[in-house]
Amino acid sequence: MDHAEAHAMAFGDAIVTNIIVSASTHQDKEESLHKGERMMHNREQQKQSEFYKTLGETIKGYDEVMLFGPTDAKAELLNILKADNRFSKIKFETVKAEKMTENQEQAFVKAHFSKT
Image 1 (cartoon, rainbow, N blue to C red):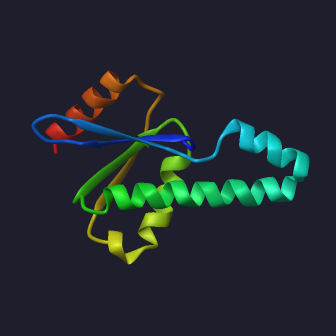
Image 2: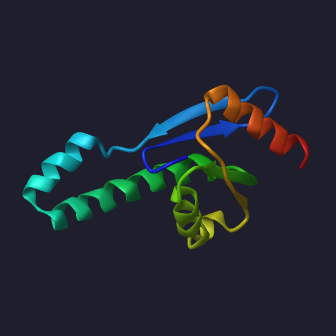
């Protein structure tokens, strides 16, 4: 995951990937820059919050969740989820990982959850 996109993968007999994309776009940022830095920052925070909320809704039914990716987005999401009691029974783990193809992501998830 990063700040723009997350691949939610359900590990079972087969790995099913659900791609969740943030509503924030480069064009939004450029338009907001013309209107002022403060407005751009507020709008960016709102869209990021919506993105994390969508991710939370996606993972709320799982017992164990691994958040991985190249940016700090995984730690930001983890902090938000840990502050919410609805996620208190979920075991979370964060792993620093480089950007991967979908096949590499699936192999990474499979290797991680096969050994646990």
